[in-house]
Length: 66
Picture 1 (tube, rainbow, N blue to C red):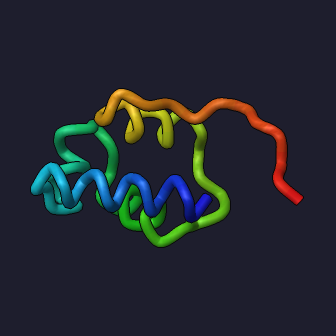
Picture 2: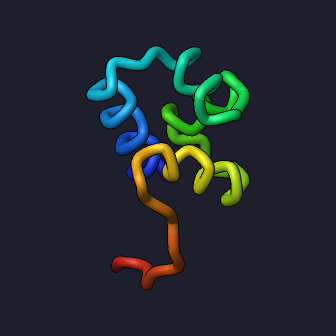
């Protein structure tokens, strides 16, 4: 999950948004945004996709890398 969290953090910063601003604009809670960016392993996929939608992206099933 840290890869998605890293992506969100990078794109959020490129957009010039604080975590608080991103949370407000995406309709997510600040705590969720912080935990996502910190790589928390157990997060809700619907909320992850809500965050990714801010950048025109979505999480999809994929094969695990060895």
